[in-house]
Image 1 (cartoon, rainbow, N blue to C red):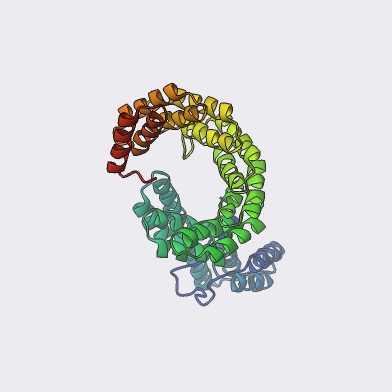
Image 2 (cartoon, helix red, strand yellow):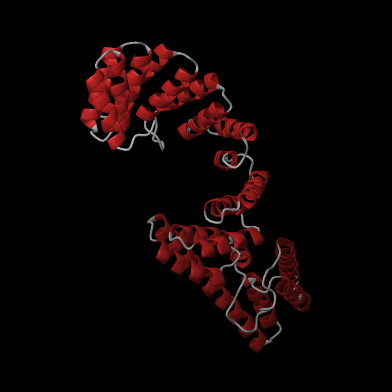
Length: 376
């Protein structure tokens, strides 16, 4: 590991000889410190040790946690026979190096616990690492996630705030996670939307940012965000499903059907099943007055899950609309067989039976539906 890299990573020390009043060293300070270290090393090579010490001291003033600056100044002081000063600088550099090494180990251990889902131990390790290596600012984000998984939402919010404040490399993700907390736990939709806007401004190529923002916007703006999410991640089925539902709200049934078709084609894990997707698309076709297409979709829904009582019942409703009363009764009866508490299936069968002259059986079905809690 290069000394300059170690120096730039480390920001805090337990040694009282360091400047503890300077909590944050800016990137410009770090760069200037590196330049001074190189100038000092060049002077030392020319045996201008006093000039080198001045450069190394200025470097330390800019970055009080610079390992290489302390070690280089130690060598220059030794050349001038300032043995006590050389020893002190060398010791300070060693303390910084040891703390850095311990911090990196704690961070790595925390990451390992995080990946294993052991969030309590992950937090313990991150707590140890942060004071030792505060320039690795991504730790706040992962500690925030760990707290979020443990439902410590206030603690998670504090860490995401800190990650944003120190301008961590995963600042955009911190905005995203903070937006979820604001939306789901604080009922702050306005703040959540602003966080997503900020996340997208930093990183406009993350599909899930747009997907989440779509949920907080009206149908038109939500449609634009979902379209962008699909453009960035065209194989994510949830984006097509959400856009389908969005288009349904806008009464764009043709577009909704197209998105559900794509969802079914992808056929990956999602928060609804393929059976439910077929049933949903059947509903869109029904709204478009495409009864035969709706029937075909319900056939597919039942085929993918023959034990789904609701899918079978919904197919019965389409058959009733197509005046296939016998087929409708068969489906309603099958739905009831699979789920004897399916109140709507009793009701639908009762209505069909009455319509075809089976008055007594139909009335009994309607009464049963109402006993089960069905309301017309």
